[in-house]
Image (cartoon, rainbow, N blue to C red; front, side, top):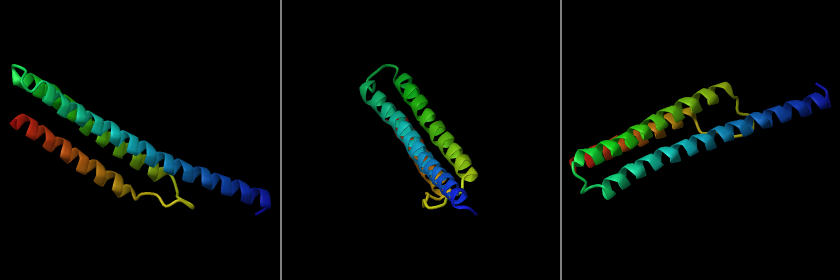
Length: 120
């Protein structure tokens, strides 16, 4: 392999590593968006807790919790798909199981938040 081919290969490998890191940042951003939805749901319940009928505020809060769970699922699905197409070279990426684990934990927490809100 010539020196130019070696340099081109290294640049390509680094680009792939940057894409892996960008995928992790994108996943993190989606998780933040989902947590924002959970925060809105809790805020709605706090602000409109005395609203009559109470089920309306709870239903709207539940919509945001459902959106959060969908965001968590979509984020892990897309992150795993992207990760499966790439090969790490010098970067040490998060294992793809980590995406699923975190999304599952946050989804369970969002669901539990919904249960608590409905019990209030």
